[in-house]
Image: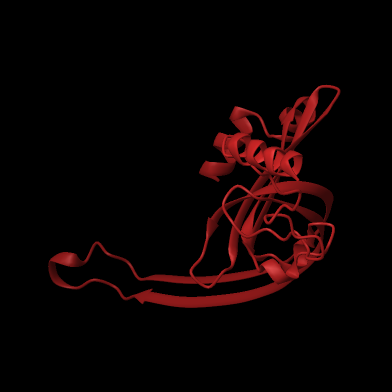
Length: 188
């Protein structure tokens, strides 16, 4: 009995300096999805945008004017009768057709949490191929509940989405008109 009491006293004396640590982590959520909720969280946006636009226009205009001046009298006798008739007719057709298709995966950063809980996201992805650099830029607002369990969201669910694809390099430079062509297009 004395041995048990002595062991118990030793445990009490030496236990006040030791810290008890739990194996349980209160911050870990083992059953919930890790959805973005604060500034600095990362969300993967699956960009799949397709745009088809076609615009056609037809124009016809006709203008006719007649002007007559009779012979002058008095000191204006030198003016002879003059008749002038003009006819102008214009017609034109035009059409523009554009098709765009963009597919990418862009990791975006949450930059702001709105008062209603929605998240402002922004992301950039650069793709370098040979002498060309393609840059995908994405900016928009998402709802956290639209993000799936893999922390991904489709671009069609991004509100106020601004998606830009910019190219820099040899191909982009050759597609841009020269300085003289730009001046002529601006003047005419």
